[in-house]
Length: 209
Image (cartoon, rainbow, N blue to C red):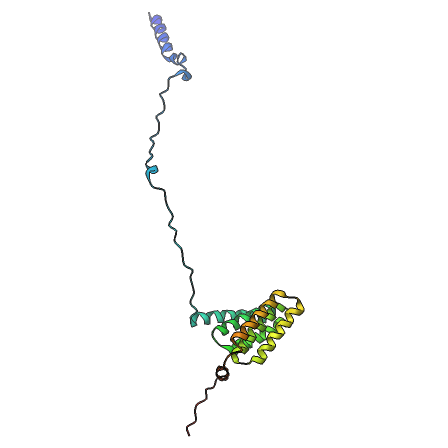
């Protein structure tokens, strides 16, 4: 009896544990995968538009403070180049300073820096820079009323452009000459005397008789 019960229990336990053999994993039925929820609400939004705004250019006002800061910066650069014998760059620094002084009607200082720049540009054989400096120097002298020397500077610039074959610079010289002849050389004599008086830095006062 004992052996009979043992045989029955073993057979029942074997059948229960061996049921997986008749239903392998690859034959099991799988439920279909759930579809993800789709939301098309973003398509209802209007397309983005970029506003076309024209930004005006920024113009820095040349106040006396701004001009003084620029002058100091260029002056330091010129001193640095002269100290380390970078003469060609220093020549252009002097021209920049002269242009600043011309805009401020500081003609005496502009003339001095133009002469320094011309001296260096001649030593460096920078003919085009020499011609540009001579044209500016002629304009400054014309503002002084020194028409004879202004014409000499123009003639020297023209001769230099011809001798070096600089056709573009020659055309610039001719254009500058015509401009000075039409605007500067025809200045009334009274304005010329005023310019000379202002350059001397003295104001004549009437004498009480």
